[in-house]
Image (cartoon, one colour):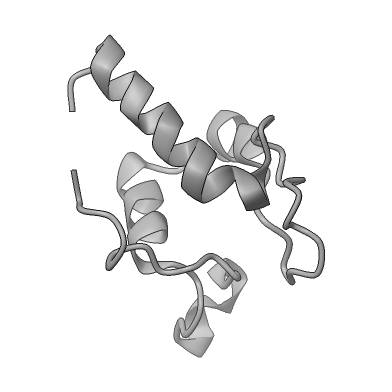
Length: 90
């Protein structure tokens, strides 16, 4: 998607509604519903500035979530919900 005001505003609204309860308003993984998850919600600031995964990984993780990954992918397992049925690819 092109980086423009409309897309950024839409992304911010989607984050506020769907992601901030766990990842927090500061993207640090300390949202109001983050307690009790194991592993805890990712610190997205660290993830995108230090780890720097490809956008395809972020898209996949948001779409497919974390539960039910094969055992060989356990390091990447998480409590991330599956969003593919709630949000379109766009």
